[in-house]
Each structure stands twice: as C-alpha cells, then as structure tokens.
Figure 1: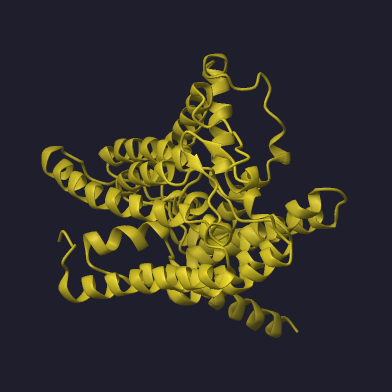
Figure 2 (figure 1 turned 180 degrees about the vertical axis):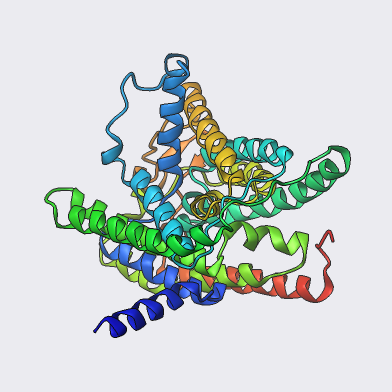
Length: 410
C-alpha cells in the first residue's frame, strides 16, 4: 500500500515537472476561461491590482487628494483580487512541486526598470480599461474591437520599448545579479511537500467558497479556475507580453501563435454564450474604443518591455520567485490606482449615453465607447468573419516576420 502511494506521488509530481508547450497551455487556458464564462463570470487581473493600489494610496494618505472612497470595501468581496491571489498560489504550488521554486533577485537596476515599467503599465491599463487581459483578451472574447485596437498599441509600444531598453542597457550600469536562493539540498527535499500543502489549502479554499451560499459561489469558481490558470501558465510559460514583444526582439512568434490559437478556440463557444444570454457583453466591454485602447496599449507596451512581463506574467513569475516582479507589481498597482482616480476626477471616464447612438445601449466616455461588433456590423456572421479574418492577418504577419526578420531588432 505504501509502495503504491509512493508511486502515485511520483506520478503526480512528474505531471508538474513536465513543461508543456504554449500551444497546449492555450488549449487548457481556453478551457478555464470557458468554464468561467459558463458560470456567468469572466477572467480579469487589473481590477484586483487597482484595489491593491487603492490600499497603497490610503496608506500614503493620498486617498483624499485622489478622490478615493474614505473606506475600501472588504478584500474578500473583490472577486478579481481573489482571482489574482489564486493565480499566484497556483504558480507557487506548481513551482514548488516541480522543485523549481527559486528566489531570484535581479541586478539592482532591474528593480528600477520594473518600477518604471510598472508605472507605464498602470497608466496604460487605466486608459484602456484593463491590462493585456481586461483591455485586450477579454474584450476580444466579447467581440469588441477595442481589444484589437489595444493590440495595435501594444505592438507599437513594444517596438518602442525594445529600442528604449537597448539604449538604457548601453547607457546605464545594471549591476550583477546575486545568486538565486533555493538551491540547497534541504530546500529541494521539502519544497514538493510545501507545494502540495499550498495546493491542497488553495483548493480547499475554493471548494469552501463554491459550496457557500450567496455570491461566494461565483468566487469559489473564480478561485478554482484561477488556481488552474496559475498552474497552466507556470508550466507552459504562456505569456501575453512574449506574444507581443518577442517578434520585435528575437523574431520568435511561438507565443503569438499560441495566443491566436487561444482566441480561435474561445470564439465559437463565447458567441454561443452571448447569444443565449449567459453573459451581457456590455457589462464586460470597456468604454475605450478607440482612443483609450490605442493610447493605453502604447503605454502598456513600452512598460511591459521594461517590466519583463504583462500583468498576468507578473503574477505567475512572482509566484515562482522572481523578485523583480515585486517592484513591477507594486508600482503597477499604485500607478493604476492613481491614474484611474485622476482620469475619474477629470471626468474622462464618466459614462454618458446617447439615444441617437445605438439606442443609448453603449456607454460613452472621453476615452471612447463600448464597441460590440454584432451591433456595429449588424450580424454574427460578419462578426465571426471579421474576428477570424484579423486572426489570419496577424498570423501571416508573424510568419512573414519569422522568415524575414523585417521587424526584429536583434
């Protein structure tokens, strides 16, 4: 019996030690996102980080100046914050079980780079109404062209960011990275056990919330799916920032094609969910088409090059011990909160409605409006044709760059 349990333990650990391809990661991520959509919710990241930034601004005494609420709501009621925590726990558990968790301190200048990048990412997310998830990926799953517009901004920002980073590396001394912590034999021996403990506790948390009454059922689903997403991203290394940045840095289009696969898989069932009324698109589409999405993507694209990742990869890399992500996360959260508050106080994000524009259904702001392709194009067939047409165009562009390196800096 003990021997059988030992074999089961070894088989389960081998599952976590096996790195899967970004393409398989896309398939698993699509499954997780569709489970969320079937449960009448969606995946988000920036909302939780903005809440964290609001808490930081309260601690700094800036809440009054920024017009933030005098008292923040309970963090246990913040679904996206809970999702972010669960994603980190999933990545942490995965790295520990695989025996690959290391505390990796970067060179000193990397902390500054992470802070600078985090600030730009926060501003970009505030303008676009979300990060690479909430401003790019989620709008596309709800058939909003604001996601494509943010992609254009992200590409332009990444191209600019790569050139700025090369200049900074030549001008400034970055220092030498200290040795990683966690290579000791004792740590390698106990880390899998710690990983299983984290995973069991996190799953128990999610199951408890799922079985609880009221709105916590949705939070339980969020915890369990975000935990799964954290594991998938850590094992597959799937990264939205790589999908956009790498074609300009190295010409590698693997992650870009993996993201295309993700969108291609999600599109048909997402259309079915929306058509059957499971989800309301206008509750999930940011009112930022097109200026906010484009400018936000531009700022976010530059920032993620310096930060070393987007919002999602910041979370899962933090979970596996990358200490640069602490700097990135702090300043991303703080600047996202600050920029969102300033935009709100200036009236740029105030929602208005016009009876002469699509029967006053989409919200209008100074940064754009809620754009939903089926309403703009008049049919779902045109919407699906447009979505897959843009995906094919993106694929052809990436394939051309892989062969010619026309847009590659290195």
